[in-house]
Image (spheres, rainbow, N blue to C red):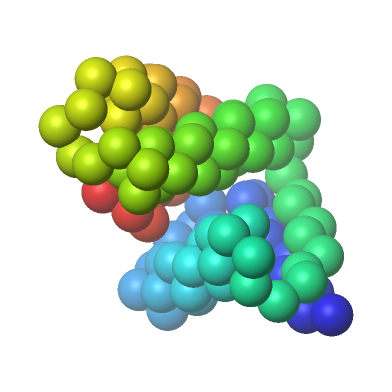
Length: 102
């Protein structure tokens, strides 16, 4: 089982390497959410940062699932995209970190 640890406090002092690492970790997490390898996830930071991260991650999966099932221009996909955008704004405001997928 693969173990992924994301420290949102560490990524706050973001540089290109940390941002690249975060993007890579996110890709592995999403891959696991869609049936890839089993993964354990540890997220560190304050409670608001963790909550906003997990909310955005769940919304990212819902958007991707709707996109795969219904296509890009379906109202269900667009609705999920709007919810994802709101969650991403909240995450970026809480953490000061840009969401790696846009």
